[in-house]
Image (cartoon, rainbow, N blue to C red; front, side, top):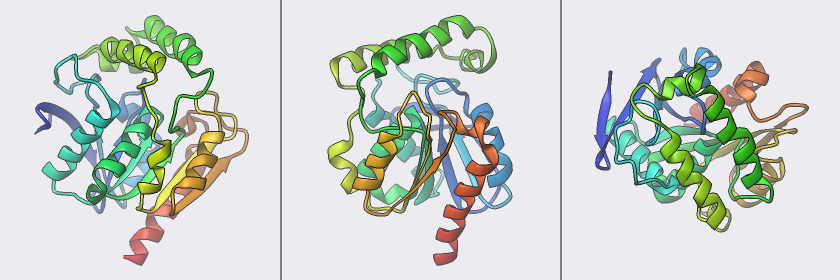
Length: 248
């Protein structure tokens, strides 16, 4: 199984397909191969999809004390450099979207375009309660089954989740609002109208503050678009990526 030595850790990753690179960054509770399965069918005939495990998840080997989205962004920048695919298209879902924003801000030369899927740029009122009830409880209930068990093959995300719980409380979890204007690459935001984890106001803020931003809001959909609307999502992604490739 492939690991890449970057940023002082061993990042596990998988890849499928050939063509321009698309790096897919998973969210807080989804193993990437399972999370992005519906998208991989659409992407891999045209693109090289690379999907790593972030530190704190899956098979990525790392110290269990160094967590922050900016640090994870540095990990992904190192992976992109190690695989010699810079600049790459980068997609982030949920928490992975926070990592992706940090990547585009901190390492602009590594990112050809940015796709922000069901994510946000700050901790909105109510997010702490949502995190406790929906995410921590979900992990405790399903830690031995399904996607959560997939993470437990070599790591236990409870360390990351406990860091996140404290970071949300003390305000250090995420806030890129004041730096969104620094994201200069073409950006696609795809968001469900009924997303409870990151309400649609987050998507509208991206559109307002990121200079080259295209916004797609999917009516009647929630947070997990790759399960709720895989065909619509794939269509939006391919339209955006193909437009960029045709213009290059």
